[in-house]
Image (cartoon, rainbow, N blue to C red; front, side, top):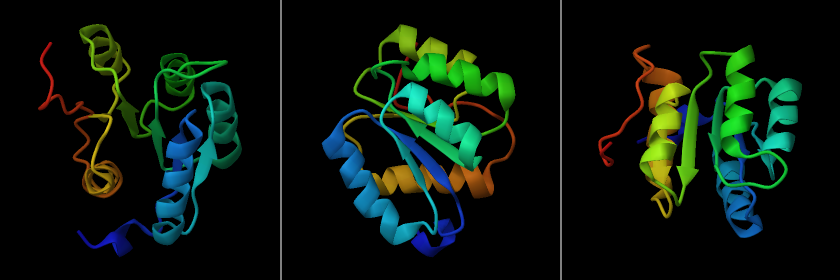
Length: 140
C-alpha cells in the first residue's frame, strides 16, 4: 500500500504503555501530517473533543478510564467515527462489547504495523458504510 494515501488522515492513538505509544509516535510522525496521542481513556476523550480526529486507535485496559467506557462516551457524540481496537485481549466478552459499540476493527497485540495502516486506509478511505467489525481472526 502507498502510505502517502494516509497523509491527510488525522488519527488519535490511545495507549497507556509508554514504549508502544513512543513507537506509534515515531512511525506516525513520518506518515501523517497530523495525529494525536493520549495515555488513557480520559485523556483520549479530551483529545477527541479537542481535535475531532478522523479515526480512533485505542487500547482497552488503561488507567483512569478504560477503552470501552471511552468508546461508549464517544459513540454518544459520534456514531460514525471509525474505531480500531488494539489489544492483547480477545476474550469473547471483549469481542461482544466491541461489536455492540460498532467498532470497525480489532487487532490483537502484537500486530504488524502494516496491517494497522491497511485498516486505517480501509476505515477512512474505502469503507463501504457497513459498520461491521472484522472478526475474521476471532470466533464468538
